[in-house]
Amino acid sequence: FRLFFNMDKTIVHYIYDPLCGWCYAASPIVSVMQSRGVDIELHGGALWEPATKLDNEKASFIRNADERIAQLSGVTFGHAYLEGLLKNPDTVFWSRPTVAAVMAASNIEPKLGINMLSAIQHAHYVLGLRVVNQSELISLANELGISESKFKQALNGLPLDDHIHKTRALMQKFGVSGFPAFIRQSGPEFSVIQHQRYYSNPEGVLQEL
Image (cartoon, rainbow, N blue to C red; front, side):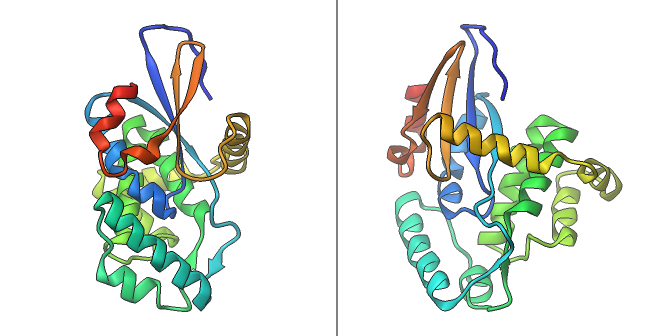
């Protein structure tokens, strides 16, 4: 990840996974930072690796967590997700294609990375779409103004394994055990933001920035 020593500049390193419910819970926090012009650097992980189908126990665990997430953060889980994706035994959860899509969008234009992440989360958690499928990701890219050819070109040859490995190394370096995580960098100084307190008060994160 980037290191620089401009004491007037702050970066927030955001460790995320597009198919992590708690990252979805943190999306209002990210939106607040984005709206205030905070420089956010994305580090995608691999929560769902390899591709996984949900058994009843996993689906029940996720549903209970999602109820807690909705209560705490106010984010919406759509009927198509709750009654469709979660209940369908053929639904596949797989982080790699979604992280790759965010990386590709970022490479086309840095600010598009967060926009792609938000689009994937909305498509998954609200619309119940199968975002592990490239066709769905291409459609989301199109909605962001990225042509299919440009998006596919950006996907081609992405150093995805290296990116995920570096994300895991970053998590280990700062003692982060799960997703999401936010690490504040101000010049040479780093600190882990205790973001959990801001799920119900996203604006409060600005006090730390």
